[in-house]
Image (tube, rainbow, N blue to C red; front, side, top):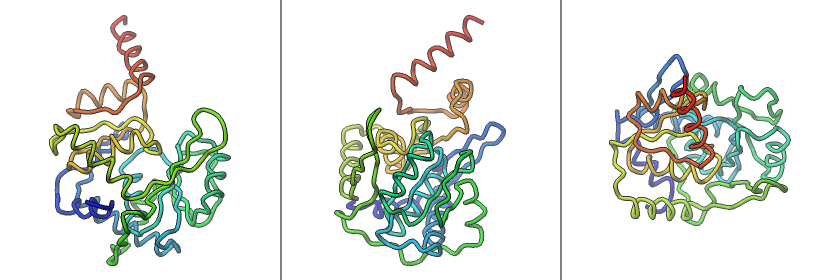
Length: 260
């Protein structure tokens, strides 16, 4: 495996296996690997129809969900470069990154009260409707391992955002090493995705790794402790990629419920 396209080509072969679960609070929606592959090919076509070509940058500014994943893989299949932006970032920061990368298109969320006015713009939550009548792209990109796959912008806690170039080879090297050093992950695992997919910690541990193994990923509409605990109780979760602050939040919530 040398590029992300090599990984993508394994998705359709998994057919009805569950790739994603979206928990919206009142509904639970599953997306199979077969559906995920087909939707990503349609996404690539939609991007092409909006003027995005190989090597163009596409900014993603939205919350974790199966549609974030479909948008990301549509970009990769098109041969474009993904530019994930933290959903919690203000519009000013997103616009700065948009300007720095000269992004050809923006995929953003309707849940942001202040959205970017860049054109063309696609709403993440509308993709399920926008892709309905779209034919899957036939000619997928064939990137070289050294080609850029994505640009991650980071500045720690202060300072101006700085772009980090990540090639297909960079991401594949990380992915294969993780799966070599942690060989216990199988398709039977279910991951609960809580940290932002715009950060490489979650992206590598809670996105690429389960997809590499054919595991399922659960996404929540809200990160309230009650929603997290409900998912833990009903989704047979094996893995959470977490940070101390999130664990403290859950600990506090559990202690409060015990006291009540």
